[in-house]
Length: 128
Image (cartoon, rainbow, N blue to C red; front, side, top):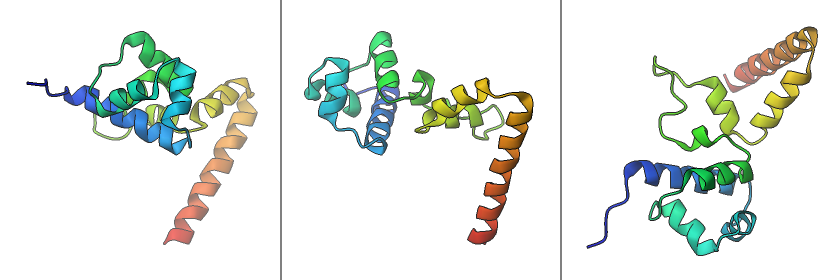
């Protein structure tokens, strides 16, 4: 009788699949980057095969996210609210934005923060 996949393995696989699809990457492309067969990527995404730590690291790099962002409840703080750092790291471009942030001066960071707040506020008004 086949063993039922662990819920964590299923979650990680679903996160890998969702992230890959958001990036417009095929299973074949991801497999090529990882030096695997696309069938192995399929098994990871279904949770049928567990992903080793080193392979998880390689998958996260290929998908441009943090390895922790692929785990369940990683994006939740103790109070149940989403962790903005984990959420940003899991988004396409999030890590790039974080890297760029580190290169900015304090006054540039403040300016960027104000621009982001303005965009958020205008979007909320338009949506209302």
